[in-house]
Image (cartoon, rainbow, N blue to C red; front, side):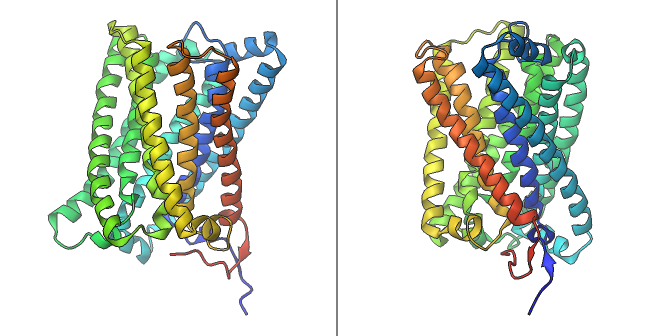
Length: 403
């Protein structure tokens, strides 16, 4: 009888970078409380001084929301960095094994894109931590934007190199890509990574007051957005064809909803670009246009959430891999759609419906709709806690991770 104690995460997969990614995304959901519920008239995002002023002068519900945001951002950012560091260490050891060489010569080579994806998320999360907790950060922010673009540039080069290695191998040689194993949206991970780098580049476009910085950010973020869109279209079309023939691979079922975070990231990217074009280049856009754009993006998300949840329910995925005894690192892909939907709902409510005058800010309809975003956020927090216990807690060796 086997009595060894082992964590499922010890059977390493690059998909464990998604544990870091999910925590970083949850930090963003808490920042939404500050972004939309704390006044920040002097700059496009709330900073430490705005939050402290609101906490000192605000009413009790606002103060409670600020405290929750502080705790949530701090806790989730800590987990984000913790699991990113663990993954780099584990990946370094994994890269010296035969399993790594096998991965590099299979369809699963694209799982390595989870590394740059999570790293780009961490850069975004650290910027949020700075805005929230560092006094007078905005006085030096124009020096930070070029540094941030260099960081995102390095991550972007890393991502493009992995993509180049993969596409160069499968497109230059015949028969090395297993089309029958392409029956999921797992191959959209490169597009996810490219979009995350792109939204990072778009941040200076929205927040900088320097024309050169804004222009550079607009151009480079456009490159990564276009690359992500092209990759998404091609990978999704070929994958859907394979799924119609072979069904959806059960362990990769959560990838059916990877479209949801890609949509959120690209939507925020385009909103940032729009703000930069307006503030720096006097390009006008109407509130109604933004509302209908976000409504379309929410519609895409709802459709893919419905598709993914329908397939997962039919396959019994939750009973096996979330609530049951089996473990799969791909389960962390379930966190991203819920987080992304919550974030985009906040934007749709505030930048769409409120700005267009459809609903009143902080009115009954506002809180009902915001409640949908908060419920999604709470569910994802519970899911992260559950998955972390499953994968990183000590368990009997009987609970072998599914391959």
